[in-house]
Image (tube, rainbow, N blue to C red; front, side, top):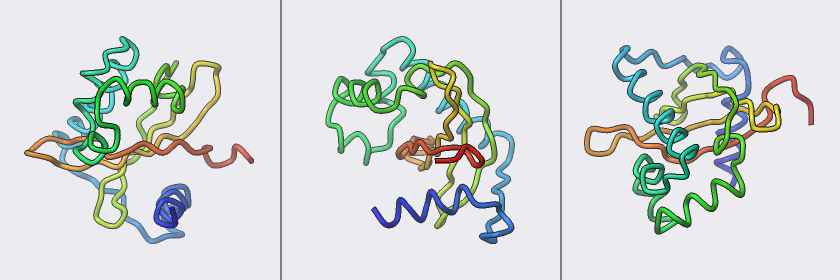
Length: 141
């Protein structure tokens, strides 16, 4: 839990305050990461559990066991990414050597959240290694 709090804190602070560099992968890597996230969200919109689960890392897949359980969890706990009205892909950061894509999401009720997507490379393909929803900076508590 402590590592999660540190990750979220680092990702929300201004970059100069934490001394992180924005990761500037080549255009193909950035496009692939965005495509993976967009593809998983498209699968959520279709309620295609198998497709959505296929974009998850082995760690996430092991945690939930099967596609149906995974989709049910997302539908219950991650409504903004399950049924987003709008997405804005922000910067890609490196935190403890892991790439994390920040996405500003407008949820189904018009609420904004910041979705933090840690990404891992598995067998030459990017996979989503979690999703953390936090209030965007300046949104209060």
